[in-house]
Image (cartoon, rainbow, N blue to C red):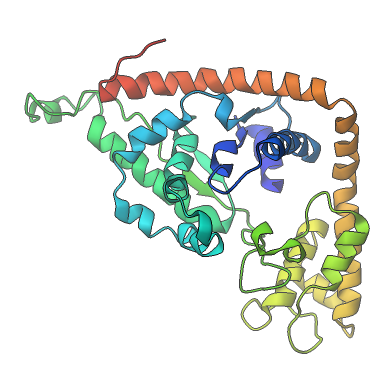
Length: 330
């Protein structure tokens, strides 16, 4: 989320809690509602400013599911079948492999294209999904839109062609990956990315208590040997921990290596745990303050975000319906 804070300073950003996506795995309705509210407070705690950006809940804005359906009519099954995340999630949740999990990337594409995004800040694991969003935007534009200035090309179209003289409806969004930390690996399995699905010991949560963070870091898997040396291929476990150290301290790998020259993994992990605790402390303190006036903050933030997001979504859907041939009802 660090790159979100940098992006909101100079860009028109849209940040959403994707509660519809959450339904692809079994949910308790009461817990889901609490998770949605907590996610908004978490975003505010890390520094997302609703006055500088648009912060909202996905299901509160009309247009996401409608656009997903329209894009779904243009999406070949083969595109979805090759999605790595679907294959992984299917193995992790064998008892709940549903159609929503399969079509998840289409809804994600709709989330992006609905707001005419130029770029999407994600981790390495989402790169394939953003590429699909680009593919669907390009396909939709080719199928339904032609540049209005290309009059000679328009003359070549048969009278019953589905193509019309509209500017391309969608931008083709770029993937924005952080320069460092695009893929943080699991603490207990450096062959996999850090994820809640791998268990509580596999990740450090933003609001973990200091004693929990210390225990997780000290229990993190390390490589053979004891040298603190960055080598992602030969020493993936310690290299992953060094990447986390670099991200929370802003220190280059060479300086980290020099700092811990002659010391072992234990010394390094103790210091890393304290650096993470120090890095997260102001975020955790702000989160506690927000909790004291939770109801008012959520009400104001969600209504402001919903209105701003709906205005943009309506503009996009009006154009989409126009080029597809569906009536606009608003």
